[in-house]
Length: 204
Image 1: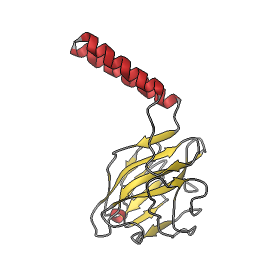
Image 2: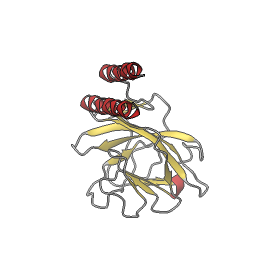
Image 3: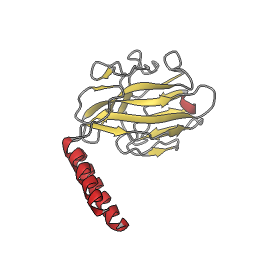
Image 4: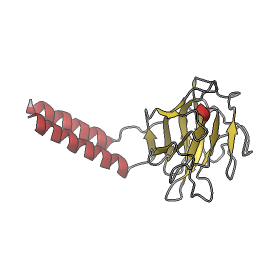
């Protein structure tokens, strides 16, 4: 009985993944809680896969890089990249302008202020509060060359303690995305979960 129920749950999970993948628009990485080390290397993140590295060289396909507990950021997260794939939303368009701490519901898109080329910033605490969660916006060039827009929830630290990258999301169609927007369950996904619940009830 338990094995059969487990198989049903696994099958439903596969249906859910295939359904959500087929109609993907907003890609969400929730509750990741990736520590930002207090080292100069920090942590580099591949936003499409969720892969991370604490190597000074970065990570293949890397996008964003937070250093020194969140005291600084860089978009030089891929040692092999000839151009950065990730641009955070800033208070201006300079390569060292500080990050903009965006409110929930603020739209991130082509009109958002970003820089071009490689760059970073330090001491982003006129907009962010050390030790308090905030939201940054970004653009990221996906592997298929789509320029996607998204947001990340982070806790940055300025007191030599580790920060945290909590969650992020982006719209893989290139459409603008509101801060803290997450995917809604599709009709097909809800139907698959309903069928699973019904099957489990019948087996009891």
